[in-house]
Length: 283
Ligand SMILES: [Zn+2]
Image (cartoon, rainbow, N blue to C red; front, side, top):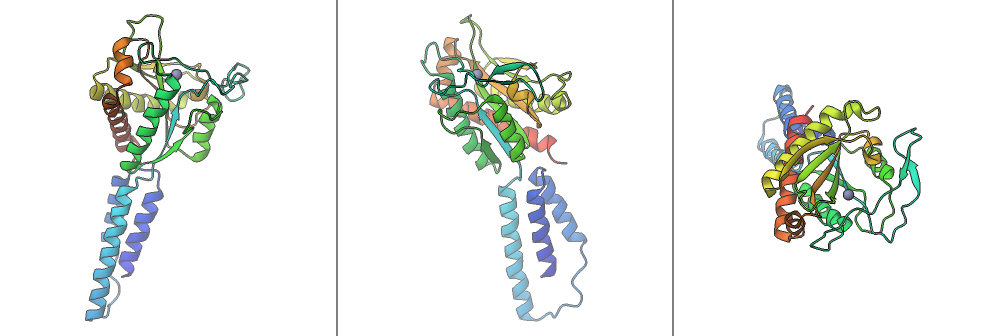
């Protein structure tokens, strides 16, 4: 009985640890096996029944632990409706004198007519649901198109919530309608604010981008560095911007507006996040 309670407590503790569940759960199991037997238990029928009961409870606790990974992911759907005035300025990084507009309007689909901020939110909401199904906890920086939240505020929201990683969802635009494909933006290793997060952000970005392109067939333009992004510079956790494709390219634009294609997009992103978490967040 006591052994089982200890096991349940360990499993509970494991679910709060910032590691991937499978690993933590394994540790918990190993520890349970090493615990001494309870001293001279009264082995009567009632006790045996009680142990069976408790063992069922422990199995249930374990099942719940498997469902919840104890990892919090911030999803930031880029931009917002143009009806929200975000024209004020804010520092481009903590303590920086460089000022940038709080948030911009984004691009739009040259062929679909879809606004980027709408596409970003559509995909982000589907991604939230998919990640929750996989056992992740999710925080959204916005869940509608009318929330006035600046790029620095989006990063701070993720920091303050204690998120493990931040995924920023965007789509690209270009003067050239030929430009197509997906890419990831991260802060460089020389970035004075997030340079120490470079390795983790690169690994996260590569995992998400490769999985996304494999799932969708989108051209893979690679992980690229950019140190001008306010929402990256304010981050205290590994952070990426996924530019899902070009809304100024006919094929990319019409693909991304297609609900069936969106399922592949979301599956690809979620699988990439999951692969990163399982390989990198288990310590
Ligand atoms: Zn954008």
